[in-house]
Length: 603
Image 1: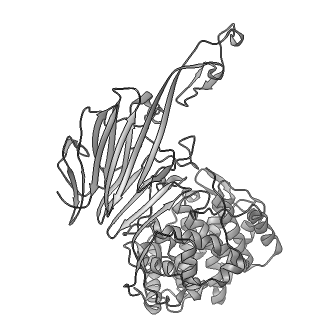
Image 2: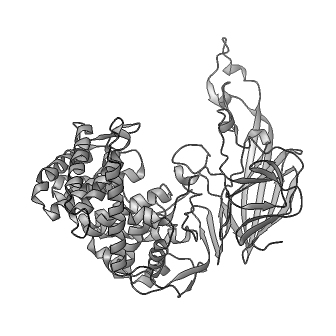
Image 3: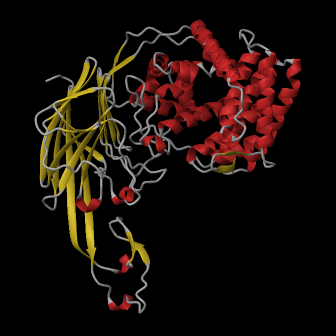
C-alpha cells in the first residue's frame, strides 16, 4: 500500500490553537461534539492520588523485596521501574517513605543488581535478546528518571547510590552511542535514552547519535499512524518523542505525537479498550487499553489546549485501570515535569457520534452513543504470519455498552486457504465493501529442458503460497485454476448493521461464519455444541450483559465444520487462532448468499 508522510511545519505547529489543530486531523463528517463533562480531577487531587498510589507501590515492593535474582535477566525492566518508584517516594518530602533507610537499602541492592548484570559494552540481557541495546534503553528510561529526582533532592547520604546509578548510566550510554536496533520503535527508544543521558550529563556524542537516527526520517502517515501501526508501540514512540523534544530541544517531534494522539481518540472504546485490529505487531490479537497514553495526552492537552486531547485526558482518569497503570507509578514523571500538575483547560468535550475512515489502514470506526463498531480490511499483502505484518482475520467488531462482539470472521474450506482477509475496504454510496479473491492451482509436467536425471528438483513454494515441495514450481505451468471471490457488504444505519455475504466460485464448499462474544454474557436463541461453541441454526440470537444486548441473525446451519478454520500455515503446526470467548457459528455452502443484521435492540 502506498502510505505517505504528512506533516506541518514547526512554525505552523507552534502557532496553531487547539481547535484549529483538531480540525486539521479530523474528517469532514467524522465527529459530533457535546460540552457536558466536568473535569474529573483537580490538580491537587491528582497529586495527592499520585503520591498515595506511588507510596502504595513502594510498600508492595518493600514487602516483596526479594529480587528473584536467580533469573534477573528477565526482570531488569521491572527492577528499573521499582528503582524509579522507590526513588520518587524517597525524594519527595510529602511521602511517608521520604529518605527512608529501608528504601535506601533496597535502592542500593537493586542498583548493584543492574551493575552486576551489565556487560562491558554497557548492555543488559532481556529474555532471548542478549546484550541488547534497545532493551537497555527501556531500562535507562526508568534509571535516568530516578537519577534526576535523586540528584535534585541531593541527600548527602545517598551520594554512593547516585554514584552507582551514574556508573550504570554512563556505561550504558556507550551502548546507546554505538548499538543497533531491531524494530522501528527501537530507534526512538534509544534516542530517548540518549536524550535522558544528555539531560544528566550533556555531551555532544549523545546528541550526535540522536541526529544520526533522526536523519532516517520520522514516518507518520495521513491516518496518524507510525510504521508499526500499533497502539502499544505508538505509546512507546510518543513517550520517546516528548522526551527528546523536551531534553534536546526538538519541538518539531511533537507534530507526529499530536497527530497520533488524535487518531487514538477514535480508536478508543467507551470503556478504554483500544482497537488494535490493524496492528502490525503482537497486539493485533491482544488489545490493550488507552490508559498507557495518559501522560502523553495530559502533556499535549496542556501544551495545545486541544479539546479532543482534554477530553481523552479526562476520560482516562475515569477508567478502571487508571490507578494500576498511572497512579501507581507516575509520581516521578510529575516530579520531573512539574508542568503536568497544571489544571486542564475548561473545554468539556464528548465524542458522542462519528464515522471516520482511516484509508491507509483500510479501517472504519463508527460510534453512535453507546454503540461502536470497527470495520477492517487492511491486511498487508502477501499475507504472512510474522511480526511486522498485519494478518488479523477479524473484519468486524461490534459493541453495545458492556455487550461486546469481539470479532466476526469468515472461513471456507476452499483448498484449506483459511480465513477471509479483505484486500482493502471501499465505500460505495452508503455501504462499505470488503472483497477477497482466492486462487488455487494445479501444475503441469515440467518441459524437457527442465528435467533432471536424478529427479532432485528445487525446493520451492507453490504459486498460491499454500505449501513447499521439491517440485520446481517456478518452472511449471499452472492449470485447472480455481477461483473463489468473497464480497461482504456492510451498511450501518443509526447503530443497526446490515451485512450481505456473497461467495462465488466452485460449488458445495463449506462456509463458516464465526462470531466471538466476550465471556460473561448470556446467549439465547442459539444451540450449544460444547461449553463455548454454539450455532445459530435459524432465526435471531441475542447476547446480553446486564441491560446491554446485541441481537444477530438470521441463522443458517448446513454443516458442522466449526474448527480448524485456519489455513495450512497454522494447521500444519497444530496451531490455532481461536480466541477466548463464546463462539457462535453460522454455516452454509457455496454458492453462498446470506444476509444478516446486528443491532442493539432485544427481539
